[in-house]
Length: 605
Ligand SMILES: Nc1ncnc2c1ncn2[C@@H]1O[C@H](COP(=O)(O)OP(=O)(O)OP(=O)(O)O)[C@@H](O)[C@H]1O
Image 1 (tube, rainbow, N blue to C red):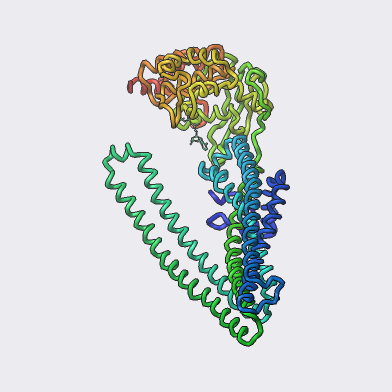
Image 2: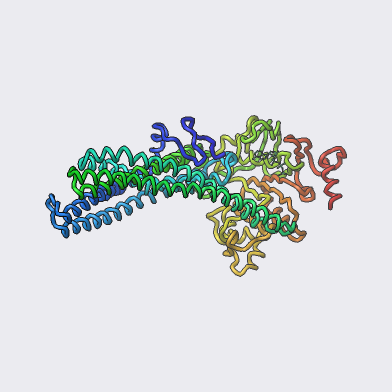
């Protein structure tokens, strides 16, 4: 799933990296559009970066002069040891000051630009149609806005600066050492960078191994999470020992991989010590020979060696940065891909619900056929024809998976029909603004999810501009105000993760209050499958009756006892309407599905 939708030019690897090609690079550069509003700060940051990188490069030169001075070989305008040391100190101070401003300006740019990307991504997510989310896992969607954006932030704040610094160090360093001694430079360049490059290859292998260890540790964490989430089930089945065993096996595997990785890490450290430091010793040896022969001075050798270390570090650093740029390009690509997704054609101007055109609620389905975009080969609805007059109440019944919810989802235009058409008040819903359509439909879902916040906010979700009096009125009509008042904080009681936990019946009544407040012409009631106690059931039924008054209502019914009074019952089976009529008519057909379902439920109760 994570690999879905990448450009054809270069496939990413398992870590979501992308090969750097001209094309991917050019595409990636488009993320810099987010830096444009802050370009002056960015340029000032770059200037400070250039200053700090260049002052840094003077440091080894001055150290060399200092050594020459101390050995009586001074040939520079500053001959005094104290003066050169002061110069060194001044360089360090300058570098410190430049670095402060570099970090300050880059942080201003990166924090703002990244917040802009996050805001755009979030808005995009909210405006995207339902099928987008069905094709992806939640974790995948959230990682766009967290991990991928963090990668891009790294580029804006650190990687770019580092890249610039390493390249400057390398180029300026090589020029200076060449100027000092061509012979020694050629000797150094033929040995040292090769060793650094080898170390990089080795380092990459180790990273791959440590990634494996991390993955295995992540797997052990999944077990912890799963067990904690389902701790009641674990205890109910007295499966504590089984879970401990599962965790232990997974943990042992992670430990084995980690230990295997440590061999390589040990070997790597040995290589660094022997190889890289050996390389430096080689350079020192050759340099010392040149000093002995009088080709260069001891101070020049000193600064040469420091430059060599800088150049080596920059070569190593560039390798690492290459990997980072690759990952960031992958992230950029994924972010841009989402930003380019087509949004639902909803009206984006903030408007009060009451300002939307009011629909009457005459609904027709004509020869509607539909398959879900994720399963195009399975036709879920075939040839659905139905007619609901404004104010009529109908119920959809039928076995699980028959297609009842799908019929409703199509009315809400979460998906578009494959063939046929749905009209509201004679107008095809494709021609009605999505905002108007959804603004005129109220839903009381099967499983009510409340947002973390107060009860007031949760009820007002139905119509954010509602007044306090309207909220109380809606809560009262929904038979919810009684229990709300019984909480010390009343409407201000927090619900959700940090607040109190409401019972299923209470949540349903909040959802009814929401719908009452929204005052829609079309109402959809998705009956809860879990049964409530009779007191709660009675209160909910009363609230539902109040809510249904004067509205076109479609009930997805699971308990047939609640729908006897509706105008029409539609029995859905296998994506088709197989029976249609009032309770009286349908219950008299002994061969019919409805009569059989009725009998079954009667026997069960
Ligand atoms: N988002 C989806 N993507 C793919 N297939 C789906 C999706 N939602 C439902 N289906 C499939 O469509 C068919 C009809 O499902 P639907 O939810 O409409 O049935 P239902 O009659 O409402 O069932 P229930 O009473 O259990 O809620 C089922 O086979 C189901 O697996």
